[in-house]
Length: 480
Image (cartoon, rainbow, N blue to C red; front, side, top):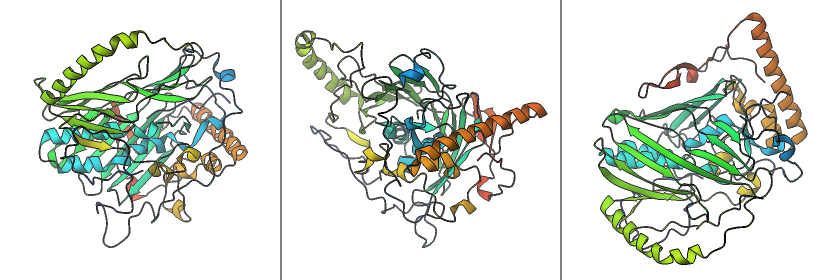
């Protein structure tokens, strides 16, 4: 095998808009998360009297066919010790480090909190719309919390579609390039309220104790009712202790969301954990107008919730907080540093709650994961349903759909030997197809996306050409 897999790809239950966000929870702490019954839809996308469906599924599964395979018997160091500082796209990893999903399916987890897009579309004022868009951008990475398994690297030409009438969207993605690996996606609201599209190709590097995924590619959200377009790029994702110790994830970096119609910008700082883990998972930022006047402050945790309030109230609270912190500084300086820093990156003991500033309004809150999530690769309820394949579904899916991949299906069913054999067979089939194209001097032709420029940023992008949902799959490649 020549290392077709990447060690880690980073992008990533349903929340419903049962609160308008127009209330205040002054002087309280968020001590938990809300579980929402996903069978109660707000009606978006329903057609006639038919029940909500996803490609023929009327009721989604709540668990995987087999529990997660243990990784305790495998040593990552034997594979990675010669790769410090190198690009990871050509390093082969044992299948035990995977999770039974393609990276294309993991991208689809953006849509877990799609209600925030619908909410933004219904807001009359641009400031309120930006608040919901910012919450959506943060919610898109919430599923990555404790997700230390590596998704399967998509085969060239692989696709994934998801239609959710109950949630009001449909989604299509395609692996458009293999070297470098690039995944393109396109989603639209079933009531013509939004378009959501982009291309993702994270650059991954191994730094001795951690794997870092630097985001590449532009994400675009268009609110059609308001003739608005927003663009942004994901934060950097880092997986710690890939050699020894407990794996843990942090997101850091600055995300800038631009409203290309009026020049408003939301700047979100995903904080690195810091020496004592005080900043772990924290997100802080603000919305400003085109003249750089701050209009709204945002804070919270990407693993938990997001709040916002008026800049004056925020600054007043922070000023008081700084005075309190200065009184504690002497005590903190007397604390000894951790002695195990050279062995593992100790998992920070982060607070489980976000302190809510008086006058704040809730922008977003994550759902609890299912009780058996730890035995299911820490999947959310939404994620558990992504690889469902009921009898007859293969007749309407493209033959390149991820659900039809035998290696992923084998792993999901707990047959690791079959999964490993199929993974190797598929990679060899892909290599032979590449050699055949080289002999014939033929270039690979993408099916559903074409190379172009983002219409709002001018940066290189992959654009949806249309036609997928007409279901003419006669020219699809044979990749499985």
